[in-house]
Length: 121
Image (tube, rainbow, N blue to C red):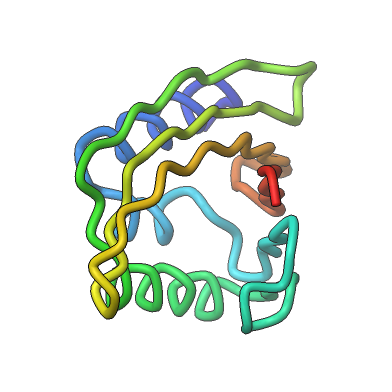
């Protein structure tokens, strides 16, 4: 897949609720995910299974009430960015937070090899 095809499919999958399905299609087995802050599991997660675990943790702890995905924004031939905004309810507390983040995805050999998330603390 080209950079644009990967970026377009990642965004479409996020809009359609196919994020987990797309992990196996779009990500390298040794992909790395980096958060802006330690959310209790460390800042960096290595490997596709670890990234799947992050998605499982999110789904177990939050319900997305509404979301907006903007992009993708291509950068050269190996990166793209996506802007995410959402209102998510913490399943344990019921608190709803507005979240906004920028994600930068690095692509090599037709797969996402690194994702980095930027957000306010």
